[in-house]
Image 1: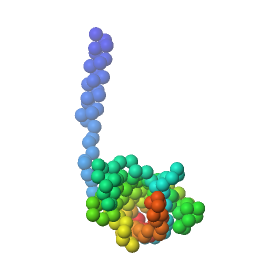
Image 2: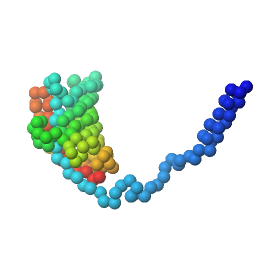
Image 3: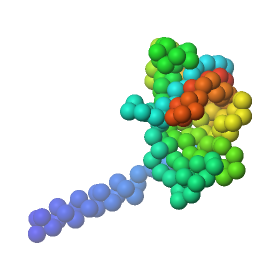
Length: 187
């Protein structure tokens, strides 16, 4: 009987706490200054993206394909996961500034174009631990491509902007590529 009374008392107290707990509204308007500084920065980043798809040290690996991928002139349906080196210069041995981690997929049946989902993870002193997120269409045969910056973390919290990509080098034999990026970020 004592155990039953303790159990009933405990359940009564617990349900009272839950019932009386003050609920939070789903959304609340906050002043702009709560999350964003009055003055925003514009930063230009310049780096080279090293897409290594061939050999034992590949940093971009195809993980999925559609039934028509191997017969499609654009490789339609191929999905590639990457962890590519970002450097200050075009030489892979130049100063490392971070990694491009994410994926790209051949998403156009007529033209060579990738759907890119990237996080640029920076480890250079000033931006160490900060990231930029890029999501967009990359028609790789154009001389200059523009992709939107859709967000970021750390120094780049609330980032928006765009990235310009220019193919610097392509190894026609194995598909390795070096792409030059100029990224303009409002943060």
